[in-house]
Length: 143
Image (cartoon, rainbow, N blue to C red):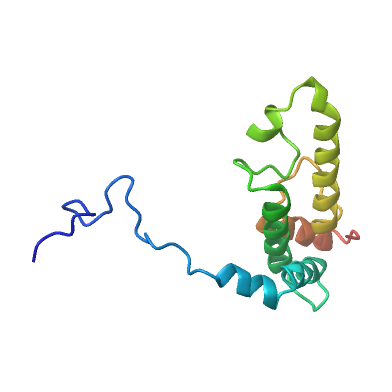
């Protein structure tokens, strides 16, 4: 059987060739917008997950926070839960230092809501946060 002209000998698509040349079906995004009140219902749903309105676990809430942040602020090239400079933050010039401070304050607020009481110098991944909570319980301290 001859190789298709849009693939190399290993079966991978050639550079500049799409595996889906027709793209997304026409009308799909319009249908989704119509069915979800221009996407408002999707955002409301994810905010409910983020706030734990139905007893969602911390992992699901963190995933909802990521979804909301990615769509609200764009996906970052580097994730930093401790407020360290990421590539996007480093690109801010002196005129936008206020915006950077505001962004870092929002990150700190979100971190405190998601990981209450966690020291700012400690990793905020879920296993580390659970270990932190376990150590507090073991020492009889409050969370």
